[in-house]
Every structure is written in C-alpha cells, then in structure tokens.
Length: 309
Image 1 (cartoon, one colour):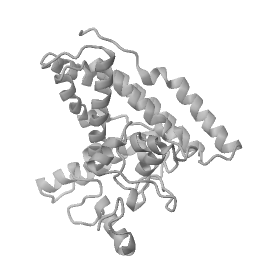
Image 2 (cartoon, rainbow, N blue to C red):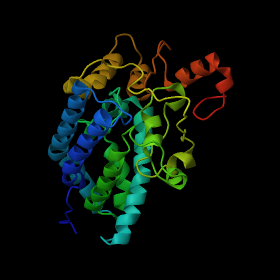
Image 3 (spheres, rainbow, N blue to C red):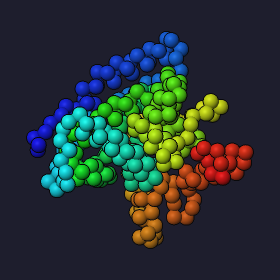
Image 4 (spheres, rainbow, N blue to C red):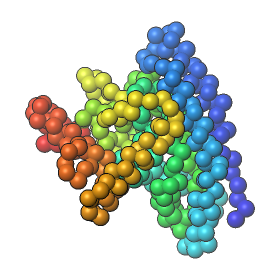
C-alpha cells in the first residue's frame, strides 16, 4: 500500500472556491446580501492561499514522509474501503478539533494559525487566508495515532481535504442560521462567525472543523447571539495587507519576546508555549483576562456561555 495515491481535494476544488467568492461578491455588492469585501484585504487573502498551496507542495512532503515512516509500525491495517474513509474522516475531525484548540491556546502554534484570523472582514476569501508555516509547528504528530491504528497517511490526507472543503463555505455572513437539527450537529456559518470574533464572550470558542459536536462535548461551544454582532480580526490588529508580514509577524514577535534580556528560561519558554497574550510580568492580557475584564464591567453577563462566573 506504500504506493497509495489520492487526488488533492482542495486543488480540485480551486475553480469552485473562485466561483463561490465571485458569487458572494456579486450577492453582497448588487443583491444587498450581508457581508463586505475590501480589495486589499481580499487580495491579501488570495495571496496567502496561493502561498499555502506552494508551501504544501514543497514542504508537505516532509510531514508525509514522516508519517509514512510511522506507517511501518502500524498496529492494524484498516485498508482503503469506504468505511475506512468514513472512520478516518470522523477521527481526523476530532484530531482537527484538538489541533485547532491547541492553536489558540499555545503561542507556538498560534504563530502559524493567527494569519487566518487577521482579516477584519468575514467572507469566503477569508477562508483562503491560510498559513505558510504549518509544518514548522510539528503539529502533524497529532496524526501519528491514526497511522498507528492502520489508516494510511494518503487516506488521512484525502479525508482531511473534505474537512477543509467543508470549512470553506462557512466563512460567510450571507448565510444566517441553518435549520436547528443542522446547527446541532455540524459546524455552520453562524458557529464559525463566533470563532472568528474578538468579542470577549466569543474568544476561544467553536474550534470544530466539520462537526460542532466536539465543542459541545468538550465545553467550548458558544452560540452566536442576535444582540451581539461578531467583530472580526485579532485582539490587536496588525494593520497590514502585506502577505509576507501577515505570514510571519507573530513568529517574529514571539521570538523577540522570548529573546528579551534578563528573562529566566521558564519565562522564555512561557513566551513560546503559553497562551497568546501571556507575559512574564502580567502586562498583557490573555483571553481569560479579557473575559474577566468584560464581566467586571458587565456583571449581569457573568456565567453566560463563553464568560466566567
């Protein structure tokens, strides 16, 4: 099975991505659908997407080879049946939930993931604003258990392509809410708008890829409220449309913090691996601090979804 090969779902879907972006733009501009496009922002997202494809083609082979080395030590062989594909899709969706949660809770991984959140608009082009440096975090190791269970790395990559395809269409304000049963099981535009928002109650919520059930199981689900419109971007917006700066700004800032003179080893490691916003002297705010500040100013909101008591 070492010669197993599947087509790239996301590469095949490029014409769909482009067509959907154009359709959404037309609906917003001429049919008064909800949403907004800004030329420089959209161009930055498209360039980030192109860079992600190039990085995947040139560097992705390294992680694939590492997983293929693990394949030699698999405990089982699940084969390539439809049932194996469905099983790995479900398990890899759970894997993605934990990767995504770690990406928001550890600055090391946030440094590559943050670029996806840097747009202050929320439209289908935002979905294409992807990382160039994902390999450097080493988070592909989360796929090792799936390989050891007997799922071929090529099958895992193929299944994850459908996960990414699902995540594309939920980056929109054109679609409000889906039927209740659908919202209860799947990640939707409403759920993912919460994830991209910087409102205090919405921070660090709704990490799902395809199935929102993981957030509900692990206590990270927060519903979108009609009375509180999501505000998009990052807590401290970077103020640039330069894709190179978007891709590397947090890596540069992180290593600058960790390299400050006079810090202990523990403090340096804190700047690398503690949550975004952590500082050795408490001069910055993590998401917990921002939520606590919000509740102090709005005590009637204490204990509501996404907020501390």
